[in-house]
Image (tube, rainbow, N blue to C red):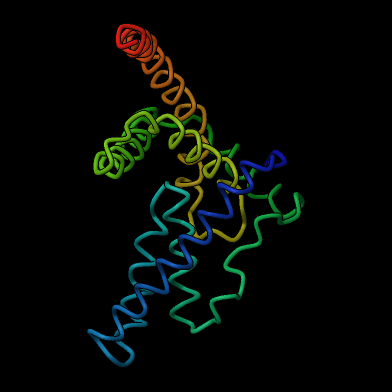
Length: 197
């Protein structure tokens, strides 16, 4: 994993905090609807399901749900983001040994990420932020694909790794298309302001 710059570190920290908050919310929600041990079992089942996802956010949520089901204190660290490179090395070697990856799986991950963010941004009509969202997802994928603490199996980790350049490529395409329409709109707005004087 490359060392994180300040912005990327904030993205990673926010994703971890979001997962912890989401798990705490799930615990409260389940305990009010299903008191007793059923809440813990349901949280662990959801964690196991998310462990199969090739999205870093889902992997973090899986860890957070496990911690919440085990009644760890909310301040207990879900994951050590800055784990030693020596701990990541064996994971990376296993993944690199897997060989080629199906491009269709990588494309599906990019489409899934774009769809999730598009639906969220649609509520605020902020599609101009979609490229930034994809870049942030690429940071998360790159940070966690070889992290020994996430529950993903090797095939899922390979999909995560292969999605990093595709997410960045798609973000660049979206940025380029946004620049194409922003300039005429900016000129049009400038002309309107100029004509009002």
